Amino acid sequence: MDRDTIFAQASGAGTAALAVLRLSGPAAGAILRALAGTLPPPRRAVLRRLRDARGTVLDHALVLWLPGPASYSGEDSAELHLHGGRAVVAAVTEALLAAGARPAEAGEFTRRAFLNGKLDLVEAEAVADLVAAETEAQRRQALRQLEGALGDLYRGWSERLLVLMAREEALIDFPDEDLPAEIAAEAAAERDALAGAIAAHLADGRRGERLREGLVFAIAGPPNVGKSSLMNALAGRDVAIVAATPGTTRDALEARVVLGGVPVTLVDTAGLRETADPIEAEGVRRARERAREADLVIAMATAGDRAGALEVKAGAAAIRVANKTDLGGAVPAGAIGLSLRTGAGMAELRAALDAAARRLTGQSGPPPLTRARHRAALLEAAAALARAGTAPLAELRAEDLRQALRALGRITGAVGVEDVLDRIFAAFCIGK
Ligand code: GDP
Image (cartoon, rainbow, N blue to C red):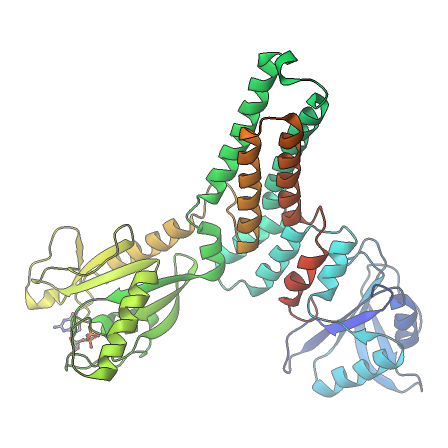
């Protein structure tokens, strides 16, 4: 596979001022020479006429020659900054194909970068996250991961495991009774410390995963309290139908908003009331389900009623809102008084929602776990470490520690990862 020279459009689809094509592989230099005449000096942007094999000028382009290994993929690479027209891109694509390059698969540039040791798997995943980042907080998390904070954490644990394992292996030839008690106690303490660090990282309330995937906030409450109106106010557009008849919002309606730098899907639930209408009953059922799964429930009631007197799952985060304060009803303790009609209380509610989104995604402190793939491997490592704690023989402890090490190594790609590569890089876009 790595013998091929690949190319792809790295800039977005559609007409723009520029289109960037990137090229990577052993023939990158020869292909660039075929199109641009001679090789420009490395890493310097120069303006060139690009020609096809018959000498027809295709475009005037800014050309970059990026010889390996100091390139993104680690291979000889080039970039062509073309004029953005579709026909220009098509003509240059033809010329690249004719010169022997082939179109890249999704994630193939980054896959080659990984195989050439330019980045580890956690960093490669961070590249995908950075390309997909929609909000400031997501961008920061991905960048931190790309800069190696998470990989360093996992590699640090691997090194500690390696030391533990080496020690157990050294002890295999000694019967347990001949061992000084301090040595066994020291090893046990280090195992516990490591297990504790992994457990704390795992028990982070899915902060990092939540930030990557976005949060779900459900707006719940009895009919006609103003749920649709709140949804519209937060989304800044008319997503929900606001009507004076109870039960109008039949289905769960959704809108994507950004709260506290986190992408949040707001779900407006149908009025939670018993009803004979089968369509509305289905809406109620779905609303209950959504409210159960949501990261946060905005429990709404009318001021004067028992605010938020609904089935908020024990332990689930909730913000209670008493709406329609303009009608004069009392706001119960612990609820935010709101009038969507006058706007009173809206700033306070927004601040509370921003703070909740930030808290749920914990944007400070040590780097959080960001992917289910990492979580699965860490759980495996933690289980193997726990087994090592109870194993009676040095041989068995060493084997358990080796398993823990392998599980950790799979996260950064330090050990046997061929099987996970396809899955990881298939999720990339072409051109990355
Ligand atoms: P939902 O059934 O909970 O989604 O409630 P809606 O958003 O459809 O609102 C029900 C009715 O209450 C509509 O007629 C809204 O105009 C009205 N309403 C919403 N918020 C307020 C408010 O703060 N004050 C007053 N007086 N009426 C409101």
